[in-house]
Image 1 (tube, rainbow, N blue to C red):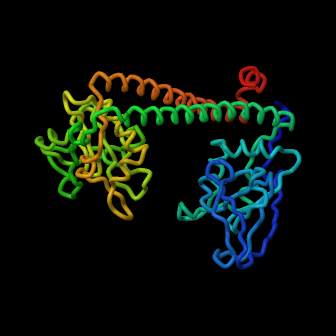
Image 2 (cartoon, rainbow, N blue to C red; image 1 turned 30 degrees about the horizontal axis):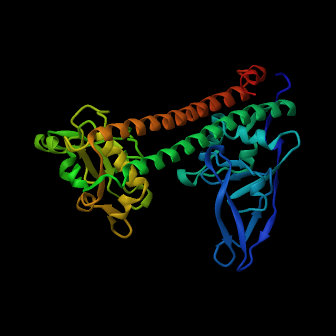
Image 3 (cartoon, rainbow, N blue to C red; image 1 turned 60 degrees about the horizontal axis):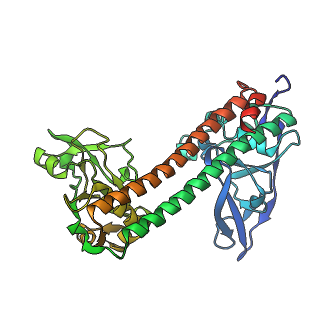
Length: 398
């Protein structure tokens, strides 16, 4: 551990200018830098005569690339092979890395909270979104540099964890694709009776949000489109407005209700469904931006409503019945006329058991990937601040 040297980034980085003069009609591949050390990403290419830039800076593999604006987001990354020959504008600075450091190791350091804090503390300016960091301030950031052999071992350990995360991500995507196909097969079974959606589900829309409802005797939590994701609910930001007792009864959610985002400027968000499972104490109501679908007793079960709604979103059936040009909306009238292949109640229960089991496997795989990301974050921090030793980690990971 004593071989680690306390230095600054400037001891390792040399600023480079690979100036390119922009010519009319020529297309220049571009790169962006993602926040919090996530590396370089894709960007629309610069086109001479269309882009406002007269000169650009060329990026080479293994360069450290810094975006000087929005510095509080720690927008620094290391160029990989696919970024070689891309270009950045004048708000970026590129550096070559001294041979005492592995570019991959610096890339890991840029992903640590300690580095993010340094960037935030050194950013200057009065407008948050425009806060910048100067070359000198960036190069003055201190950190501990281990010997090359130790850098290689740390890069290898974190790379092994990254490989596990990538494998889990790929597995969850493959399982999700199988789930979507199976759901489509079951929901669109051509051997089943076809009925209108309003013969299977009870439909309701919520109330409009108005200034008059911002205060009142019966302030009540309500869900809106912002709370509904792809099969999930985000209840971290639930708002309230005044619903009378009669409205609470009419618009209040019951366990198993399915809420559907009825409109959005993004086609990808139109029709996103989620099931309400009494996550909050009643009453909880809905805003007009949601459609509420409820199973008709004796006709269908809540789980069938949910999986039908998931299919309608995944297949684009909800989007097909959405009206509007810039902002698409699913009207209750159009939704009620959609076709439903309606199985018997017993068959619905069988379908729900199968699809719910598949969903659980997908969710468990995603949860494991999320857990491993947290482990990676803590592991990286601990390796770089030397609170754990590399030998013990290698025995567990590599």
